[in-house]
Length: 211
Image 1 (cartoon, rainbow, N blue to C red):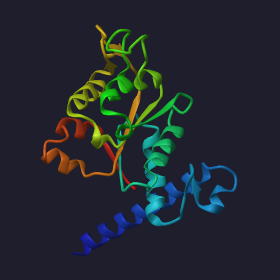
Image 2: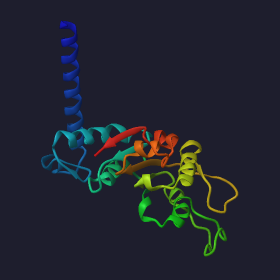
Image 3: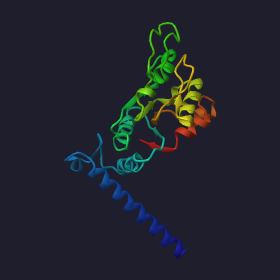
Image 4: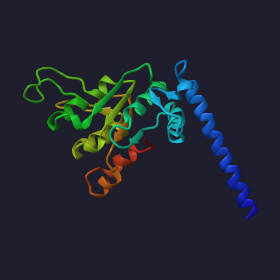
């Protein structure tokens, strides 16, 4: 019992040290005056939950990990995604945000992956999709839970093969992007109801961040 108590105290002390270190480094990385205001990359707050998010963003930004940001509408999920991008090695490259729920269903595939001239009525010229426009940078897929099942399969291919196919295209196009996604719905429940692919869920949810 004494050994278990000592081990627990050591773990708690280490966790506290990490939290303090992460908060200090997060606040130190802001603009002049940010530390006093408790601000971090556009997010404001000194609550332990906010400090945890600042620390997590600082830790994962420099990795290539795919991140799934969850939380209710209006909690600032895109701010977290932008903070991850700005603190990453891709910060000098494009950050392309896409609200999947705001795009008409018939245009989602073209918006994400682009299309070739003549691929469908009204396609008078080749159009590059968001993934190609973000090459070298970061793609942020907001409201990912609204993505159609057939397009979920295409997104899975992007994550696995690092290439896309334009609508009407005949060969794959390589893309180098980091994918961050966000949702305000319970994707685990969507997986159970077969509204969301389980394999894609685990590919997206490598590092979970709850806001």
